[in-house]
Amino acid sequence: MSRFWSPVVHDLTPYVPGEQPKLAKLVKLNTNENPYPPSPRVVEAIRAELGEDGDRLKLYSDPTGAQLKAAVARHFDVPDDWVFVGNSSDEVLAHTFQALLKHDAPLLFPDITYSFYPVYCGLYDIDFEAVPLDAQFAIQVDDYIARGADRVGAVIFPNPNAPTGRLLPLADIARVATALPDAPIVIDEAYVDFGGLDVIPTAVALIRRHPNILVTQTLSKSRSLAGLRVGFAIGQPELIQALTRVKDSFNSYPLDRLALVGASAAMDDEAWFHTTRRQVIASRNALSASLSGLGFEVLPSAANFVFARHPTRDAAALAAALRERSIIVRHFKAARIEQFLRITVGTDAQCALLVDALKDILA
Ligand SMILES: *Cc1c(COP(=O)(O)O)cnc(C)c1O
Image (cartoon, rainbow, N blue to C red; front, side, top):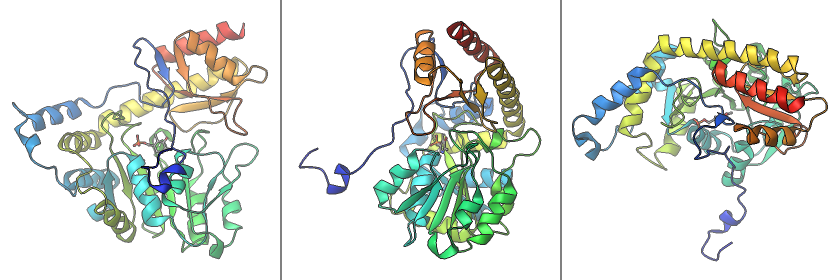
């Protein structure tokens, strides 16, 4: 509290990100980073942009991010003006909350979901209602539709949901978008690239027929670039223009030169992308099986993490015991999920260390 603060600052409840410990040697399975490095082409592109002496850094970056928009558009086979790019998907989401999700009727999102959503609502003074997940921690779109089209301002949820990892079928997303035609429906696909081996179940497939669907994605997870801070949104130009208006009222150059070339190279390296995401999917399925073998209840995950609870052992105690063994996982002290651990899928070697440590702790 300070008399120097704007009044709105007193009322904020900021998001608390997962810990980024300084210690090396930790098995870090707490913030859903990719265990593999990014495409080598990312490093090449950044080196080329830096040149001998970094001379180009004296010039502003492209305010429109045209090169990256074109790379994203190529990947999804959509027109360039259906793409918005930003400095992380958290920034893209922040602009989305301000540009598209504040209406007279409340914004709806699940009771258990990405905990940044209520934070943005606080920042932008958006009225929201949490819609409970069902007993299996799944989203039931009928609960959203049943509110009635004139009583829903907008809808947002991650797919797969976080931190449950559960995937909602595209048919359900199409159904909610059809039933609430005047409400923007935002699908936060931070993890969707881990949702299928051959076919990625992205709602980008729906946006031609549904002008109210906006999809957001990040390069932080499936493209191993959490440290570069790049995200994007895809939707019809009417939605994209709203985001651009907010962005150009906030920061004209959100992406720096290195991020623009590095992210473009990552989007273009399809082979690296598919190899690494398939490896993570294989490791996730093996990890889920191992945890089930240890007696954990593991929710079906379509993400690069698993969400699991032990029938008798306290989750906070398990997290603390893992920590003593230099393994960190995420535990949320929130209603309904306080007995779950969210465990990022690491390399097979990291997953083996985790499973061995849990065996030891449970013995
Ligand atoms: C990680 C994550 C993001 C944020 O990604 P950044 O691009 O790193 O900001 C957004 N939504 C969900 C659900 C996430 O888990």
